[in-house]
Length: 284
Image (cartoon, rainbow, N blue to C red; front, side, top):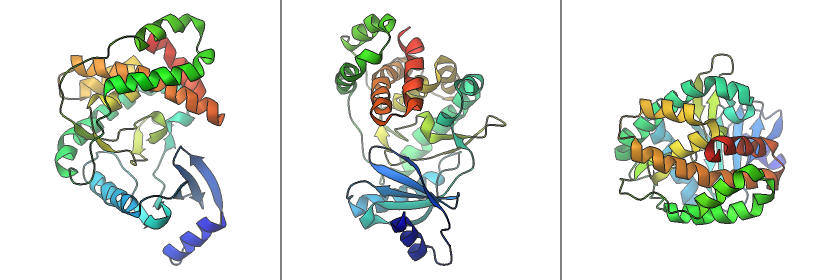
């Protein structure tokens, strides 16, 4: 915690870090909350300083494209893998009860569809120099899903195992599609909402943003919020839907085992519970 205090004091003159607490962590970073309002993200391992500097430029550019608020960098220390920004309004959707997510799934999905429309059209042109391609293919996703499933299969209800294993032995959807700029990790942990009114108030953690299959983030929405949310998102998205939906379903099915494994490895029941719940619509 002392390192965080020193960083804030050095890079935000006049700002006094009275309280510091761990906000959360992922595979690459630990996020700290300062004074209940400032997020300081630190890399767990040394990072390329140029990559952090690029992310700062990326966030600034995304803010000019996204119809939803995104973090605005307060300061960065690239050589430490450090990025700081003031918190956006709202709570991560992951923190809210499944009943809340079910009630508001359609409205959240529609908002995400509008966001992805903006990113996949305007963003593709304006962010070309700040994000590279993520060309990880669906066959590669399927192979990785098989490995993740083997590590968590004991926690998968027996009723779902035949459908899961048939999917893992299948051939993923084929087809040509242009790569578009997208968040590339748009799970409900990265969507902020107003619990009182159901509105999406912001999108956080753009560190994986890249040029990807347009179906990628639709798949994560479907994984976490189900078919009603996916239907609403696709209605708000102005493009051909059939092939997009087919690939989105494949991404959702592949990624659920990675989330389940993450929840089990970190003892984070939020990920475990949402993944097991999703199996009902993914493989039911």
